[in-house]
Amino acid sequence: MRRAPWRILPIAAMLAACASNPEQSIYVLSAPVSVNAGLPAAPGRMALKLRPVILPDYLDTTDLVTRTGEYGIEASQTGRWGERLSIGVTQALAADLGHRLQADLAAGGPAVQIAVTVSAFDVTATASVLAASWTIIWPGDARPPITRHGTFSASVARPGGDLAVVAAMAETVAELSDVIAASLL
Image 1 (cartoon, rainbow, N blue to C red):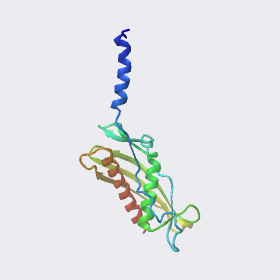
Image 2: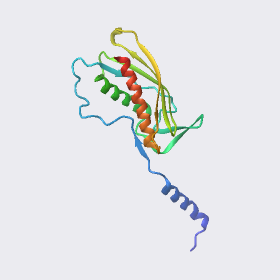
Image 3: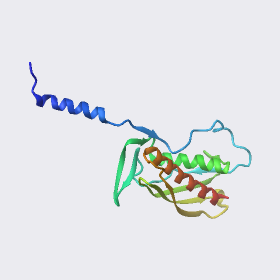
């Protein structure tokens, strides 16, 4: 018995589509947790509380997105975040600040609070640009709050690709952390 070719074509198309889907990699912005993480803080260390970082809604996704042209964005077909980007940026900033300042990331009690709002986190094939503002609120009204803003950039290494994009984004978050840490000293 011979099958009609029009019945075989949809099956062949589905099999070809499954075979051509690229394998997807999953990324995070922060480094692995160190062996010393979670140990009690040394006496006299600064206590920090980083509020959840606010990102534009179109970026707060698990899609790894890049800018295309003046107004477009495109989700990577081969890479995605292991968590929503706002969570990843918050965790990366907290880890960086804790390490740079040798601070205790406080769950409760009096702590310096840091609120960060990212207004843009644009990535192209060649660069990552992060624009953010942050406010530092001192415990017990000891000092007036400080509000600052800045723009940070990093080049996407050649030949590019998802891993190079993630590395450039992590570098811009680290630059933001450096400037926030300097604001606290």
